Image (tube, rainbow, N blue to C red; front, top):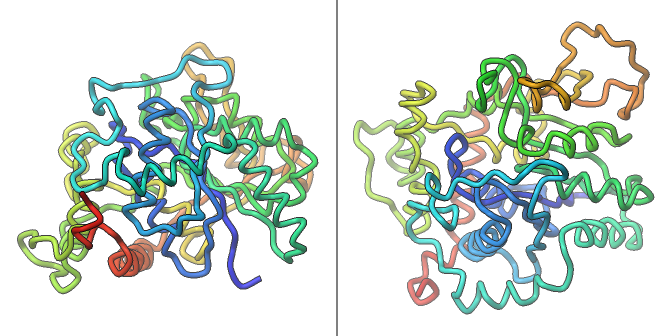
Length: 367
């Protein structure tokens, strides 16, 4: 099969330590070569499930998605824990500070919303897998997660008979000796895992191949001033001062990516620019050669008083494991290194492709 079919499960919102990069994952999923996005599902995050649903619809329209690509509303709370929302920090709708995205009541956004109400996230994923099986395609569905994995855990629990139709689970989350949440953040906590650790462990226990893109790697994908310049205007790479945006889409992406640059600098010491996180999952699916990965045993701490939500990566092969991807095996490929220059060349190429199709660049479609 020439194209990889993917499903993207995401939580488009502004969160303190990740920015708006679910939106960049959506952009790449729509415009990266060799990938076909079959559908999206949304999940709770640092804004509620209604807002992540609306924001995904807004992003699909802004990035020129085919009307057949729908959004399926997913879990509103984690499996066991209370939901984590920060509207006072991130804005009520989860995309505070972003300029140029259409409102959720835009006619074309509303039309996609109405079509998207037919089924929820778990059924949407199941239907996509079943359609591929019924179609007799050679390939399987790759399921990508860029938020808490509640929807994915529910899918693998409700439809274990469909796992043979899943090629791989790829998720942004976790860390190896690094994190970005809680008093033990210097070890291995990261928001997506911490938000629903039980869901993450359920997915890690499945017999399907899994790839983890941890925060160690995503923190190397820094949007420097040079990259920001090229994003705004591809003819202005390496300029001293940021140029004006060449198109409305590029202006919107600039605000999406860089709204929290100051917070990254003050909180995490990122003086060169903010990192992208979620877009790396899509880059991995399309071009795994950009990454160096090692197969490891990965688990999530579920019972610690101070350590719940930590990813436990067996770096020394201490645990005796079989050859499976499941409960007793070395269950996960762990990304350890990224070709940063290669990734940003790919990212900027996808922006160029999106620029040619985005309705944001057609003023009559943005009102």
